[in-house]
Length: 364
Image (cartoon, rainbow, N blue to C red; front, side, top):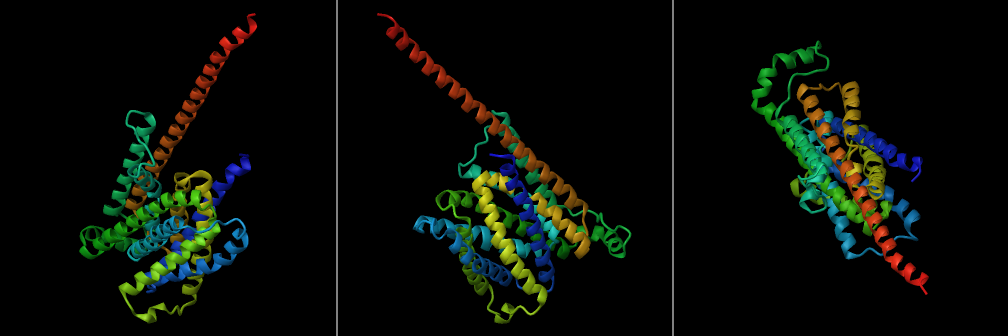
């Protein structure tokens, strides 16, 4: 692979996470204005399906294979876990906490993917090897950071001399024991973390889809359509107030169109392509960029506070994430050395087997 080919997945995933950060900030803004969670999700996925349907038909109509029952089941599960449940849980969590804080939990996605891959037998972590111990240590540090994010808020670190920040500091002791505020913080954190777990399942399902149905536009269009149907059913089962389906404000319409075309359309196509090229763990390893970009938007546009607990928890989560990735790089190096050693042994055996035959041919 050329240097340009190696950098394409990296640049692509940075752009994808920048786009996701914009989606999260826009959704936080319209959720604070009272827009229904599942209405957003349904319109977003419907927009994505409508946008990608003609694109997938034009680009992949000649090479796309027949849609089998097995492939459809995987696409249905991918839509359920990666789109419907992930959006429902994450957006519900976003109602209680800031976009930056919600994005902090996205950093657990690679570790969640690793843990789920262990449970499903897709990964190995032997404690007798350096790679196995490193991966387990990274997973434990990351989950410790997630627990810290949920249960410790801390003092505000931004605008400490502003009136709002001063009020927060004066009421800090009350905040830590206040039932309502405490409950909102914990509930929002648990919902966001649960959404990250369902998204981690999508990466494993998508790795399977990319092998049996490696057509990013078609698979994303189908998953968006299935996710829109699932989200509509879930929304109608929760409440049947039909007035909530009418988007009246310009920001609501812009947010849904952007999230559908860019967030659920092009971004999921890009992630599917990256999973196919470099695997699910590499693809999910770029999630910390979403938090970084969201923090920039949150602080500059929404003027949200950044708290000590968020920073400490995020540092632990990101540290654990890259320790896990370091362990995987050690494992990849060990596998490469083992394969090279086996190849040398096989070549040596072939050479030894050829010597007697050569000797017998040389003797009259």
